[in-house]
Length: 345
Ligand SMILES: NC(=O)c1ccc[n+]([C@@H]2O[C@H](COP(=O)([O-])OP(=O)(O)OC[C@H]3O[C@@H](n4cnc5c(N)ncnc54)[C@H](O)[C@@H]3O)[C@@H](O)[C@H]2O)c1
Ligand SMILES: O=C(O)C[C@H](O)C(=O)O
Image 1 (cartoon, rainbow, N blue to C red):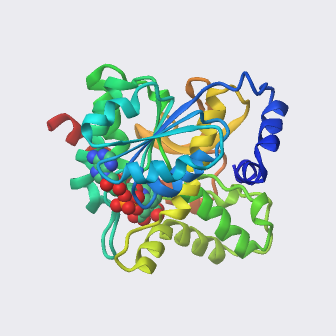
Image 2 (image 1 turned 45 degrees about the vertical axis):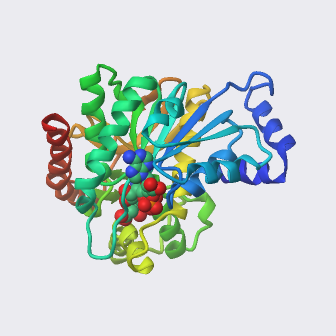
């Protein structure tokens, strides 16, 4: 993705030649519509920019309850492939969604210091419910990338809304946990003193506090200079990464720029999968049977229909096994809270 952005910034010939190397002719690169819901927000605006730079996108629909005409006009002047349109207010939501291949949802309120992600439930659950009801109506086959918190509950809410509408396909619903992976990579590279762009670390579980479980025992490149205490500290920092940003922003919201980057990486992976690029693997919070919980984040292979394969956890250290058992009760209750909300209201 970073290379895609860099190539795009250098000029379209290099991005199209990259597409050619991947087996697409410039004429046959499939048309793909991406909709961003909450596009005028702290995440939505930089995410709109990054999706405008993505050569796989042919149409970019920017939807919010306010402010999207300005964001769309601004982003639309960038000389890249996609056509941009802004949509504002519920009466324009259908048009924004129609024909979408990927819908990215960063709509909703962010945390302030002292709040948990679950404290956002009361407002964001209703927002997600209404947006997913519209997705079921206007683009039931789209891949849905859920960013709105609490992800551990908003993804189950989306699943229930789609089930009620008769459109649920578990292969097409994703909780975006990429920021946890981005953080784990950055913190590990800093501590292990290895080149950050070469680092890979799976992060499993969910997206809140101890439900975020980075698997540093599977990190590459291997680092022999890290003690058990270092791994514990890296795990805690990854779990508290969101809070670190919320506190630093001191009441002005939560992670937006790093989240836009993470959201753009995940959407890019979804588009590559849809376009038949082989071996696209990212961590995501999806319907899962790799533990007893109905939703769980782990590595997922992406393909032409969305999730092609939910990959297992692989070998865990004793510390990670303990972390896995400790996260299950909280994750289970967040999932159940989402399911109950969707079915009672
Ligand atoms: N998954 C993650 O890793 C992750 C990371 C960071 C933030 N988040 C979450 O993303 C969400 C958005 O964060 P932000 O910083 O961009 O907030 P923000 O307040 O800056 O932006 C949210 C946007 O959503 C819009 N919105 C509200 N109701 C809407 C509706 N019904 N339809 C469409 N748009 C609507 C608002 O108008 C606003 O523009 C929060 O819930 C936050 O907790 C998730
Ligand atoms: O921490 C938050 O509230 C936002 C987001 O979930 C994050 O991880 O940065």
